[in-house]
Length: 200
Image (cartoon, rainbow, N blue to C red; front, side):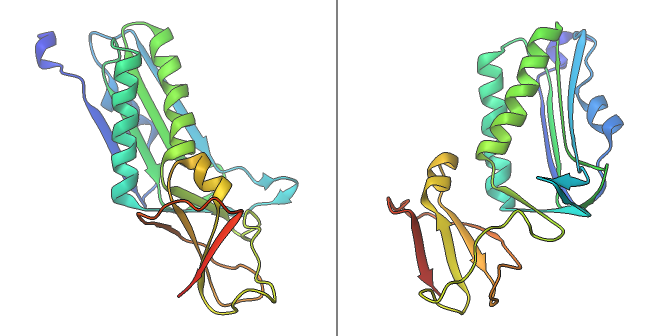
């Protein structure tokens, strides 16, 4: 194959179906590369000492895809020899031991692909609007208090928003305890207070 025809490609997919390691790894194979590095993130059966039955992922899909494309561009700037990049992330319920995210990178030599894969997963977790919760919602710590409205509202932690560099809004359902959370990504300024709250 003429190397000019094997142009670098990015394969990005958010899907509710089970992820395939073989499918993702095959996407990045190139005759000009001697290394394919993979990261596979799976659901484990515990979190901070609590039993986990499954994880559930939700995403602001269009923005998530845009942010992953930015990660791929950054990878190519940092490691110009990288050939192909594949990022597949599962949405919905992910049972124990099944993959929630698979990242594959090919390059002529192993150092670049290994470093690029590490960069991809770390940046994805820090900046891409994909949210997870465990089956009992034990990852969620927000509750309604007497001083806050009992009805549905949007609630967010300003320090968390600043860490993610995105306005993050949590949707709290009508309940004494938080039972359902959803991401809402809107174009609002991040408030400097510890919390912001606006009733809907």
